[in-house]
Each structure stands twice: as structure tokens, then as C-alpha cells.
Length: 427
Image 1 (cartoon, rainbow, N blue to C red):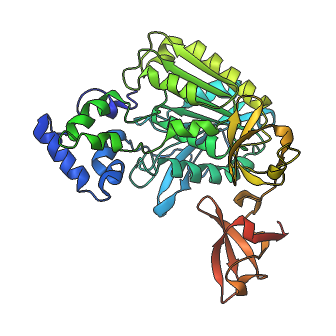
Image 2: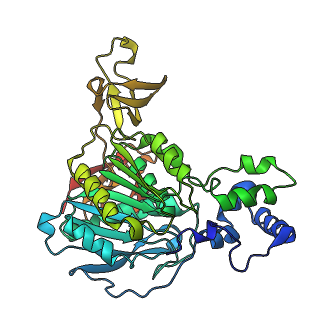
Image 3: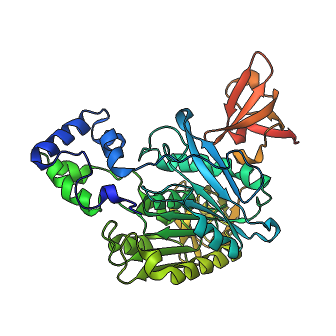
């Protein structure tokens, strides 16, 4: 495989060489709309970052059997393809691994990994990016993490239908796919039980090709390259990760430097984390050089994920109590992530505090997944007063944080937050 090859040494095919070509590229980037912030969404950058292949599904729409192909809906009406590998004995299933591949791979090329995971009591949900396999649209760096959220939210119905909805969920990201895996582990800490970062990309600006081209592109304005923000902030998101985390990286990786793995390990807040280096291995030959060791590390992580629980995941609403600082008792805030193994970082109204779990109480909130399609709900606490008290039927999820509800005329369909809905009847 040549994952991340577009970011690795040498100019991608079709890109003009020399300073004249670089100046032309910069002109195209800066003229593409959005100024400096729009660079990451420019088609030229997309052509370097992604190398999609089209593959026809062989089990599209299947609801039984070991292989099930389908698509998840993402923003703008596009679809992302997936392949779901289901072991024959779902009753013994312990975990589902969500796999996000490298930029030159596809979701269907996972048969061997699926067999290995099945032997370890896990199913595999291999997820593409826009424009890969039978998906639609064009892959985009700025949309990558949001698309992963859409896919994760929609996957719950898929897992439930397969009889593995209660299995532990592990996210596994290889190369550029690590951006999606880290994002989900930080955003859905109460639902993700394990994280695997496999030759993972942490910083696009830290890639050798970008470090070489960046200063050349911005030669007339050298400060602009330093001002350019990362499109993902993957390293920043690691502060919210609490689940067991396995970081694996070849120490001779020529595409994503090994230093990014050490940064990842340093920044990851999970109390249970491991950095596994593969001596002499590059970006695309770890499985060839260390196949058995790679499998063993994943098996160990899966065992840790099955045993893991997190009472205070990032994003949870909590209330402080029984503190010697009386003014903080009763204050509510959001969990930011763990601090070591004994304290929880919480954003309270008067600032961030690191508190012991014994001094925190979870405030239960309903999420979009708590409102199944077909359920009857009642709207409340809305600024549009005439909708309060009106009952309707749940039609599905809108985005990642709203519920689509069909109300009687003249109201029609609305997308409301879970906090503004009360369950009346379920299916």
C-alpha cells in the first residue's frame, strides 16, 4: 500500500515542478476562496492528500452473512461506503472495531484483518471517505472528522440489526485515518472503549513534504506558513481521550515521522496508554516485518477495551459537591478529560478545575440516540412557543446533535435538540 504517498517525498503526478510551479500552486490556493483558512479545502490539496479508488460492492444491502456492504449519509447529500465484517457467532462477540484506513486504501481490502479480529472475538466495520469505493462526493480534509461523526452515529442501527449493539467499540485509525479515530475517541468518550493509532498522522504541517513545500510556497510571506492552522487539531484532541490507547509506529517511517508517535503518546491523556515502536519499519511494511507482534498488540488492546469503563467521559455534564471550597459545590460544568489516573478535568463557570471523581456527580442528559425512529415525542422549552406541548413522530437524526421530528400541520418536520424533547411512547 502507498498510504499517505501524496504527502511523501517527491511531487505528486501532474504537479508542476520548480519555483514557477510552486508560485502557480500558491496562486491557485490563495485564489480558491476562504483565504488562508480555505487552503485545506482546496482541490489541489485534496488531490495530494487523497488517492481514492472506485470499487463495486459485492454485498450491497445485505442484512445477513459475513460481509455486508452499505453507505452512510454525510453532509451535502454525499454517501460514504462501508464494509461490515460479521463473525458467525455474534453471541460471543465482545467488540466491534471501527477501522479508518490510509489515503490510498479502500474499505474492502480488510479480509485478513477481519479474520484475525474474528478469532479475537471482534467484528470489523471498515469505513471509507467520500469518493472512495462506491461512495459519492469528493474527499475533503476539513470534512473528514465531521463525516466520521455522521458514520459513527448511523452505525448504531447497523450494529443493533446485526445483534452486536452492546459490544464494546474500538476505533482504529491508520495513517490519515488516525485523525478520525482520535476525533471519535475524544468526542464520544462514553461510547468508545479503546483507541488504536497505527502509523498515525498527528500533524499535516509536520510531514516532511509539507515542511519542505510550505516555506517555498510562502517564500514572499514567510510568516503565513506558521500562521496556517492544522485542519484537524488531532494532538489537541488527545487531551480528551480516556480509553485504553495503543500507539504503534515504525521508527523508520518515511511518510509520517516517528516523532509524531512520541508526540501522540505524550499528549494522550488516557491513563492506560502504550507506545509500541517497530524498529526498522517504515510507513507501509509494519505488517510484513512484525505481523505477529502487531496482532498481539491489538489483541491486548481489545482485552483492555472489554474491561474498560469510564464514569466521567469528556463532554459529560457534571456537578461538583462535597468540596472544601464551598463556593464550588453545586457548580455544573463539562468534563474536559482525565488528569492522570485520579482526577478529572472539568470546565466550571469560574475556570478549569481538576477534581476527584468522589466530588463529581453526573447530570444525565439524553442524546439523539435515545430517540429511536417511530417514537412519539413532545416538544418543550422552545422559543417558538406554539410548538411547545405539540407531539410528533421521530423520523431520524439530523447531523450529529439534533432529532428530526414530524409534527402535525401546520408545523411539519423540525430538527430539534434532545433537550427540547420528551419521550411519550417508544416502539
